[in-house]
Image (cartoon, rainbow, N blue to C red; front, side, top):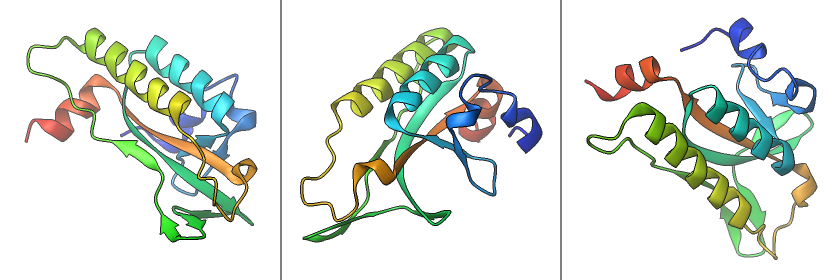
Length: 135
């Protein structure tokens, strides 16, 4: 995986909008997340999923408090299909993640406003993907 220093160079026009956790993972508001997805696609990174982070006082909360209880909010499970080329996988995964984020609806009974929400994307380059899935 990439070092924190190299990650900070990845999103040159989006860094100022990002929340970065202590592990160097990025999260953005929805509009900037869509721009980050475009950057990842243009730079040959596949996207494997996303999750909503609620940021309260610099702390990440990975679930949404609703009137019905707590629920997680995200999407995961994208894998490369047999015979699929890396460029095709990058394109498909980006389209799938973009689609789910675009269609995602904030729960009407959420006890936290959507303005506190950032979206973290799980992404990999081809070498990272191969080391994760060729075991």
